[in-house]
Amino acid sequence: MDSTKPIMFSGSLLVVDDKKLDINAFKEKIPEDSYTVNENKKIHTYSITYFKHYLKITFGDGSAMPRNPTVVDISTNESLPNPRQANQVEPRETFGIIDFRTNLLWVSNYRKKNSLLDFFKQKFKNEKIISKDVYSQEKFISLIRKLDDIKLSATPNLFSQSNTLTSYLADEINGYEATTAVLSFKYQDKLVGSNLIDKIKTLFKNKHNFNGLVISGRDEKNIGMIFNPEGFFRKIEFRARIDENEMFVTDSLFEQVIEKIEDENV
Image 1: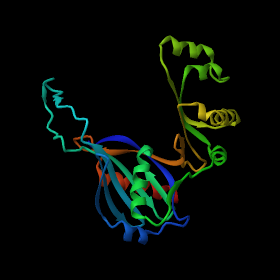
Image 2: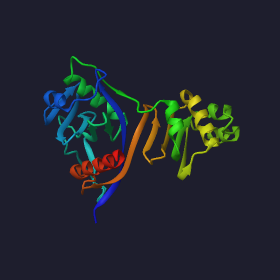
Image 3: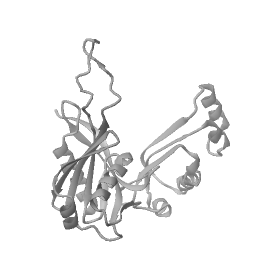
Image 4: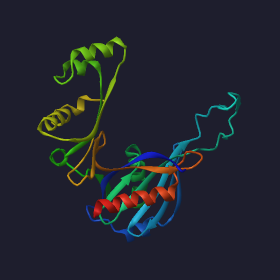
C-alpha cells in the first residue's frame, strides 16, 4: 500500500502589469528547464514544466551552513560523520502551479510564495508581477458557509483583555510560564450562523493583536477558503503519495492537484 501524507495548496491571484496572464509570455521568458540561483550563501532551485494550460513548479532552497559534523543512526544510536559535505545543500521542496485560465497561483507553502515571486520578477524585469488576495475581508465573511478550523496565538495579556477569552485562561498560561498560547478550534462540517459570523468579525477586528491567526472554511460550493497572516486565499487539501524517503512523488502530486483544480472549475 502506498504511503501518503497531507498537503495543502493556497491559491492567490497572479497579475502581470494588471493584465490577464499569458502562457506564451511565460514560455518565452521562463522556458522549461531547471534553474539555480545562488544568493547570500543560499541556494534556490526551480524546476519548470508546462502542461496544457498549467505551469508546474517544484522549487526549494537551502544553505550549506550551519552543518552539524555528526549525525545519529536511529537504528543503533551511533554517532557518525555527517556524509553531507560542507559545500552541499539539501533543499526543502515546495510545489507551485499556475492555472492560466483563472490567473491563480497555487503554492504548497504560503511562506515560500515570495521566493517564487522573486524568481518570476527576475524573469519579468520590465513588468510588474504581483500576487493579490482572492478575497477582501468583507467578501470572505460573506461567502464562508462552513468552518474547518480556527487557529490563533496570543500573549496572556491579550487573553485577559478579550471579552471572548477569560482571565482564568490567562492565569493558566502565566502559571505554565508561557509567553504565547496557541488555541486551535476544529470543526466538522460546522455551518456558519450569525453568532459565528460575529465571532469571526471580532477576530478580524483584533487580528493585528494576534501573533498568528488562521481561519479555514468553505463556501456554499464547498470551495476551500483560508485566511492566514499573508492574506486571503483559496485552498485545496488532499493526501499525496510519498516515497521511501517520505518525499512527495512529484508527478502523482501534480496529477492530484490538477484534478482538484479541475473539479473546482466545473
